[in-house]
Length: 368
Image (cartoon, rainbow, N blue to C red; front, side, top):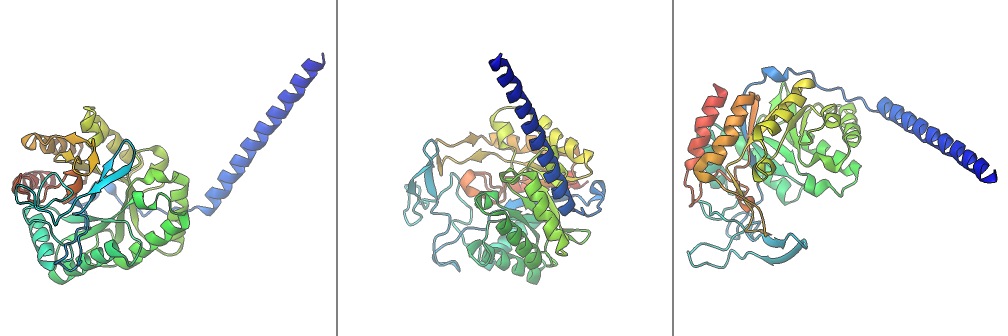
């Protein structure tokens, strides 16, 4: 009998505790919604000008260039099963084929270069323009006033002086994932105020555009708070995220993916993956941008690494055709020059200018 009474008492306490927890959660949610006001910009996503963009990795330097030292060409090699760095590439070493030992499976037509070199920037922008690329989406992982930040300043300044290509920012989640939320907010504030006013920064109806990479490192509510605080401070901007989930679609102004390599490597249906992005974006009236990929090979920097063959251009063709079928307003390319992962379309000794020609073909068709 006592045992039965104890069970009933325990049951009452459990019900009471559960009720209290649910009530507190509802109160917290209501309080959060009171303080969060996203005030999304009113844009017609379906009427945007069609544009082709390429992810640009502005982290390369050489000792004889303005960077005064090797940057990124001397990339590490990681054992991915232990996450240990086992060695570094040494560009000072010439290999049997008379090429430098760099962290890449392919070799740039220009050789290892410095992104602070204006002649390099001129070549990249000229090539991109010829291929029908409208925007370089610059991989930014701060903090302000350090190497990467200085590099985008140099690139943006050069584009302003020479009427070059438009730039946008890919805010890189691998660097902010361990940062406190207020630091992320401060960095986004810095990016918008520092670059967003430039005539060569990508804008939609006057709003500067940012791409958030690895958005799922923070919950959607965290992003809602950051975006709300920035807009309450008077900043107007547009953000796209790579978290293809309803909670994030409610917060951000657009959806995209950095790369479809996961779908290609697993042989899953690329059209289904792209359709999931397009369908979710349309449901919420968002911008969506789908991504072309020439192939993937990171075996020069990761062991055992991952490889998706280029198949004489067929991989690039397949991803572009999926983009054309789903009629996104923006098309992304992964990448212009991510040499470490072998996704570059920039001219190489292996492929020459094949991928510039393919890009031109598809960019013309995409833009009609």
